[in-house]
Length: 449
Image (cartoon, rainbow, N blue to C red):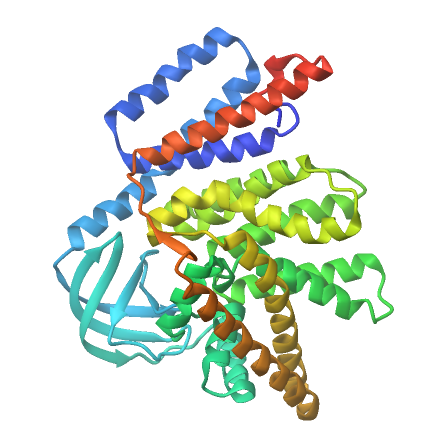
């Protein structure tokens, strides 16, 4: 990984880092940041000036997050009332404020609805909770994506019925986890497959493959096929509420695939950097969210470490590569996931090898059931929904069996100061590998960063 080959990756990384430093709001961090300026002047390299500029601009952009943190402190314990807009996963947004509230006693509303709520605010683990004393609906129209979100939800309910399979499909397809039973959430978490419940790049990749397979049966040229796939991913990103992981996946997919159709090449790290830069520029509050951090760190771990493993046999490639991909993703995400969720799954690389194909088939069958249901081909939709129901039950029960194993996971929540030390060690290992490789090739190590 070199500066002159992946400049966009370093630009995006330093911009997001600048936002994170601003959120910490420390005088020592501010002084350290500005002490870098004479150091960069001393180096006399223009690329370092540009990268320092991204760090400083990100630092200034992070002021928005600082205001949100101050708002959390100021509103704690106060009695408020206002019009809230319902988002997925039981999150409500107060009008003109991009920060979610969890409303106790307000479950069951449809995505995009607006309700007037009165209650007292409590802050816990950086999240705002309101124990609502009064909830009343407000007459307001939903936008196109909100209406489509609710229509898909009703179709899922019609096809699968009110059961665990419906709750699982609702979580996997729409990202609505508020109705998913806690036992299923805990079983997925302890089995190391909790990321499957969050709308992420994995889901975008699965949908990309499913749509590509469907379009392969039609006489469409590659350009129009690509436009249809990207348009579908764009609609899907907005249908599920433009969450951080799926936004990263959408931008990353465009960055990787568009140059291919334009007869150009782009480094996967640069594509990841573009996604990081755009998402943190427009949504700086995402930088501290677990979904954002886990999504980028997992992708970075896979992109950097997996290509270094060379496997020749086809059988080993299709079995070991998924296992190693999960392992490398876990290496970079362990501190963040354990900090937010309080446990480490010991079986994650192996369970992902089993559940990824099962979830892919489950998603395919559910999406086909939805497609045929919208086309009013109910005979076909009922067949696919029946298969999806059986597979959904298998996934839920198998996850429960694995999570019940005594060695499936361990409870662990690291001290905050240990997390930078962990990532510093990872960074030093990467630098050592790059320097060792370039020494063997006779390359000037000053190009490494």
